[in-house]
Length: 274
Image (cartoon, rainbow, N blue to C red; front, top):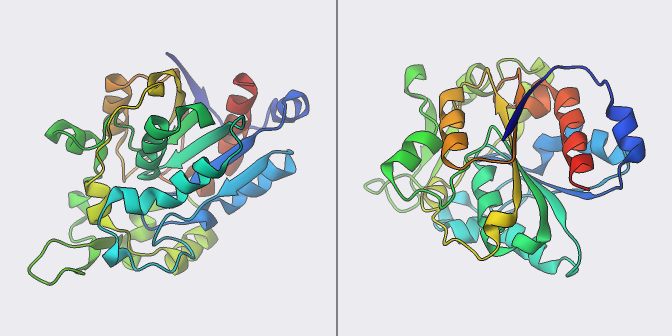
């Protein structure tokens, strides 16, 4: 397993674009996000000649579903699974997941290993079989208790039942999620973030699929992350070692705070696995 620190420079990216065979990136957002959060990265990658699909999972982005009605992870992740199922049998994608989107990537690895050329986890939950143990929860679930009462919650099953959706309060989103990002991007996010189906995510458990271990994985650490702490990221990396680890000096949202560095890194990964 190699590890490399990435700075903000674009050095070498143009050369990689020129010599790399164009592939297909599939970008998966975290809880409460949507395909919109990749707008900078998508533009850069498409301008480099790649095909890009940025999906909305169920109840996210412009998907009309009420997140309070999405109670299973299979239901939540169905847009990605349906998309992979629809691909031609000989097409492989570069599957990229951010934050809780890492769970969607892992689910896809187990169910469609032959469709994935390489899986990239960006500040993402990377657990081989999902939330099967207390250690999985400790490593993979954000602990925001230091910020106090941070969530607005929805109770789709009634006030006496556990919450069915959560979203970080608008007043705290920049401090926690986007502290290094341009103000215009954190403002955009505050307008577009939706409550995420927390029960569905907490229920994520995976049966290991045949061929899943042959899927190559890359992890991108974010050293100033206040959501998924770097200690949690490192714990998951140790427990399920990827082929390579990169490090970005960014907050939890490098698609806003370090877009050029992230773009260059994704193009590098694509070129490396051609």
